[in-house]
Length: 129
Image 1 (tube, helix red, strand yellow):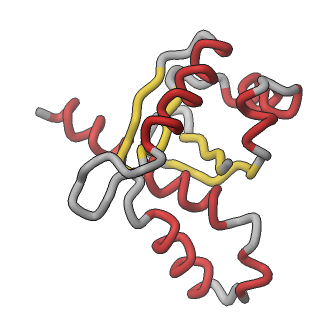
Image 2 (cartoon, rainbow, N blue to C red):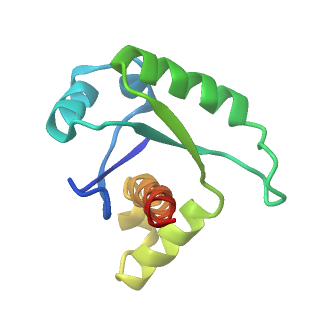
Image 3 (spheres, one colour):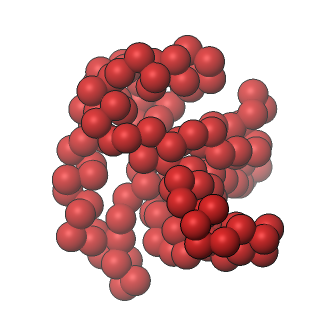
């Protein structure tokens, strides 16, 4: 599972780490340390959608797991469309000169930072309205 965080101002998302899903869902020490380090106000989870914008086949499972994580951490949860985030992450990593092999383990956290950034940008736009 890719993990990303924003800066203190809530303007810039950055990749943090990839953890096994079981560690995040199980609230393992590695995940709790990340929460302690970044002190998030909200958890933002990617919502798998089809290209037509409908919930994808994994959406219900992902949403249920995300709710468990949020409940364990006592942190509010929001969802954001994650369509094409992995493809865009691969493109960015290729442009940086990564090979398919060196991309392993990086794609998910870069994708997480991309959809977190879109969520941050949308919130910033709401503040300006």
